[in-house]
Image (cartoon, rainbow, N blue to C red; front, side, top):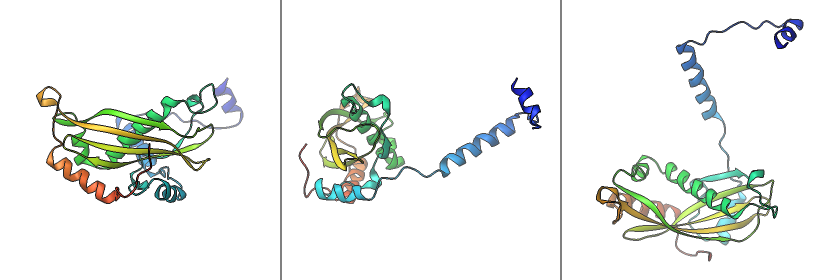
Length: 209
């Protein structure tokens, strides 16, 4: 029926053989097209909100989720985002931030020798988010200790223009070559984290969880 419909309006549909060379060309073109698409950007007002209410340290350039759409499936029976979704947002944003930090930190994440492992989280929900909306999720380095570092993060709702959730994440260094035992953060990773913390300028004031 579909072929008949095409013929009835005078369209010509030539057969195109997909060779390995053509397939590779199509895939490469799709990748280039995808990479050329503009990535989601956080609104400019968010940096001002962070500086005013959350203190120094939060940089939109480090945002793991600059602008994430709220899905209908994330809404619970109370007509707002389910509590567990916030934890997933924070997890995704944290990993995306680590990936943004480049190959040196990605090597630290590989799990082949010493790697960062989540030890605990303290998550506070402050304001409901409903559908439809967009959120921005961003982290900063709060403390760097011998065997761990502590991140703080926030979820910002675009409609409310409020900090809707805050989190504190404790991440420990674990040596997988010694039976997954806790260990000191390697010197090169410590220097990297300290440099990132200096760039973020954290430390003068922090909002309470």
